[in-house]
Length: 215
Length: 218
Image (cartoon, rainbow over all chains, first blue to last red; front, top):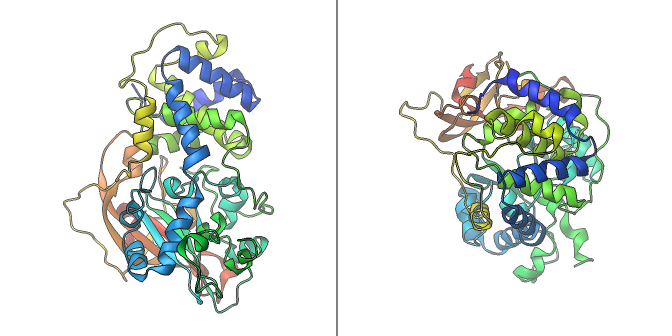
């Protein structure tokens, strides 16, 4: 039976600190062996999760959604109204996107997403979160010094641009829809999707026109 | 709880590093720790909120210094020991001593794949009408409570405006105690200048999703 008791869990953590190998690879190996031998985890299921997030599920999905929003105003309206429904049109709804909220950058607004309390992220559409997103530094600073954080990412905002920081405290998750860069009016959806970076969909990048040279 | 996990607004942290790192995984052990934690989370009393609470209860030094997926798998182990599926003696010896009977069989690869495609809803119907409406001014409770909560420390006691109402959602504070309870969920919009002294004169805003019992009329 689960205790739901904080003192019990604190005590177990305290014991585990010294009982488990300190080196993360050895620690993981020790736990995997025990859990598999005790049939508490099926190695085939572990493989499935790893394969999905290594090979299939990643920011290319979000980029496809953003590119569609750029070329199809009706889709964009649906995306902003109900993100989960809209990404469902691509078959991308899933892990941690049961309540997806898309937020749109404009000439006057820049959105930035963080999870100060843990590391909430819209997995099924952006894949695994980058290590910087999970870092203590980002979690501490993004709500208090978003402009300073953005400058470190190379984003310099005019004073007239409002920053909106979204702290992912509930099961609702956020996807930033960056602005479509100038000069790509005749590009098709697939080419546009190549301009959309992972960081831009978290809000840590703003101007995607620089990516045109690379595309 | 007033733990070190509640990082929003803490000062003295340095620059953000590895900003252009695109890799989902950085090593084999990260892959295994990630996969194991997701594959094993089906065990009987697991909820996302109980998992978060158990991670918050990692010792503060370990919380701030051990690698991310290392924290996941260590938290999973702590939960399994608490549930009685695993013992500290087995961890010590590395040898299993009994066959546990989990509430549910371990997740198969097919279940894992189906789970990744399931946009699980946390909406819960609530009979009471919402106390607040969009546009209304509210103030966050000053006391965060000693258990798990999703009211960040930096918002406590602060006033903001209801930006949106999302209907009833599972209340994390109750879920982390093993109770299922729905409560109205709102997005509250705070002026950055009402949260941080250095944001005086700024038009920037911070949006936080907060449950009804975290809020009172301002």
